[in-house]
Image 1 (cartoon, rainbow, N blue to C red):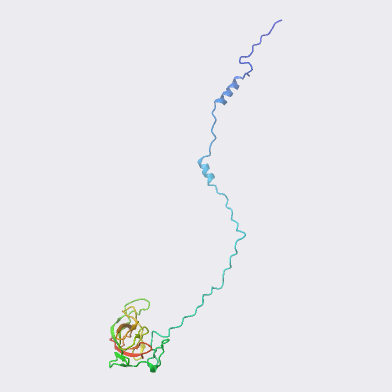
Image 2: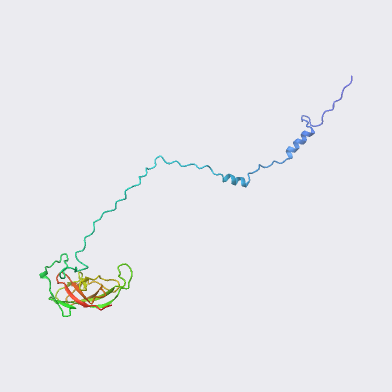
Length: 250
């Protein structure tokens, strides 16, 4: 009886035998490098970042305060009461009345027959009271207003009067309430006082016995005026004195 000889495959017993194609395929898998995952380009990132989300309207709060309605009528302004006018000061004489009226000062009222009388000098530029008090007046300067602005009558003529008070009486004289009024022309027009253009100051303070003081008052006068009547009202004790001063044409 004959036997057929079978040759066993080479290799280690227990191991499976792979074909040449399978070995080649496994070699390629082991040798081929792993490719990195592709990252997004910079342009794609910018495009993604610039993508705007859709706008969403904000809802009004449910507890919002109710707005007041617009007022149709205008707001009423505050009311006020005008203050009382001073009982003296400024002009001592009003045109159209007879003579010069004495200014009534609060708390210093003196009957007409109780006021100290005065006597004028011949030139009417000075006068003396019975108690020894003397007053004199003269034109110290004249000119034309050059200042401009509110309150100034640019181009108007003016005259400045130097008035002196000499107290030869035995009592003090309060000069803080002196009122000087200037009248010009046949119609005795009241002249407007002038401040700022020249150095002019009102009398003030207490004049002691044996002392004298002087100051300057300035007034606007018409170009045609040749003389001015100065009504000097010192206080409630002395009657008003009317002095005269010559004015030169400008």
